[in-house]
Image 1: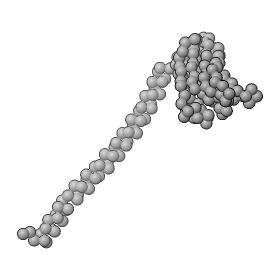
Image 2: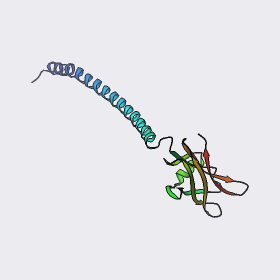
Image 3: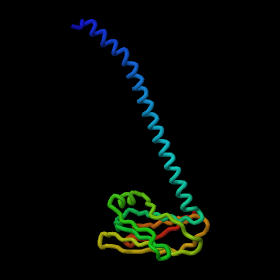
Amino acid sequence: MIHPLRKLLRHWLHLAVFLPLFSSALSFAQEAASDVESLKESVLTLNRDLLILEEELLYPASSQIAVYVSMDLGAYFALDAVKLEINNKLVASELYTDKQTKALFRGGVQRLYIGNLKAGEHEISAFFTGRGPQRDYKRGAKLVVTKAQDPLVLELRIVDSSAQLQPVFEIKQWQM
């Protein structure tokens, strides 16, 4: 039979041997976790830089066109869908969920389209479908723009008209 003192001494000896090993393993695990966090941060930064570079390469400023959608309060119109045509060619369409529409009501702006456009004159058409308090709407807006060497930025605006008690649809060109 093992003497109780000897048994206690054996436990203390095991503890004395394994405690430094456990401590160094814990330290190694903490360093590894720190390295993983640092690596995650580096990957996110690199991904962001690559996306910016990709956008600059695919859509150079001299031929870039960007189209955004914005809404006013929405008392007279609830947006269901938008279609965008450039020179009678469909380039973008979007179906909106209630969550997306609410975000637009709160002042959000959605990038509907980004692409390339040659210099010269172009016809931009937008078609809006949605629900009003009295009836459904299917309306359009049209704008002829002249593309120069600067980027072209357009906003498809849906604004409530208190005077007409209905929505107004327009395309606004932003100056860069």
